[in-house]
Image 1: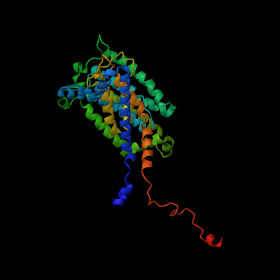
Image 2: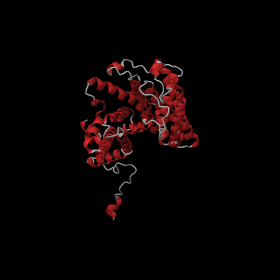
Image 3: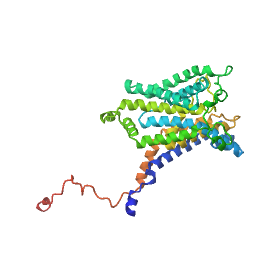
Image 4: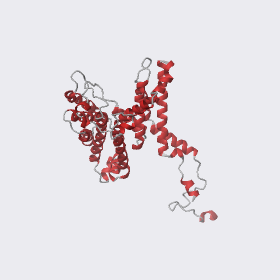
Length: 394
């Protein structure tokens, strides 16, 4: 029994989970190293303390209460980032690249803010509206892809900007008169603010920590189950591998493409609602660039090894270093150094597949061949038998 277990034991470097983890850690280390080198070129005196400040984030505070409270702020922004990451991941599993997650995030923020300030709707109804609008916005990309063969990257990018400027126009009706920012939801519609279900007590009275955090984790687990354990998830992944083969097998490949991008849109839009319904941030109606949350979701998805559970940790890490940039000494460096590190990690994530391939090759070289393995041709019924009559006669 023990011999059988030894034979079936997979080498550590050949384990898919270990490969994804090591590749992700390598991307993080190289990203931090490049960020440190850039800091050295700008001002070598404070480079070490600056990169440490980015890594420490909320730990830069000396008081424990402030550390816990600011950890809550990081988690508040991790929840929407996780939703954008799941949006990208879900579509990528079906062979689609949802770069339109940024625009879907924007329209989700738009409808949730407007429903709260203009209509005074409760928080749960605002979330439902965000899901529906994001679903429809993502479905537009799906219809263009399925029926007109328009690349989802092209249509997604175009819809990002359409969503941004449409949002600016709509939310102008609920903004401050002398400011480009929207009104505070807490001041006008408290029932629209996401409930904190007692979580604020765990984070030193941080009122922005809300139900969005546990909801995002629950959605992540459900999404993993759907992809790995259901027929629906199998059909979606089969369509992604080969839509023609899926069609031949009786699967509705066009419906699956539309549904995938629609669900991806709903997830990203829910992320927008998760952030702005906490009232942690206000929308700036003069925004001329799409928020980076949707694009950071791409990094989090690949850094997490395209695994829903892995994206929980990668989303937190991306947000951790992004928030850590605020603690860099502004007299010497720009706080955008954390964005540079994130951008490098995004770039390096494209090499995750290559790194995993290298690890597989290294593992294959190190693992010795089984000396007890038999020549398959000896017992192969198809292999031609040796002609024993020829040996003696010749």
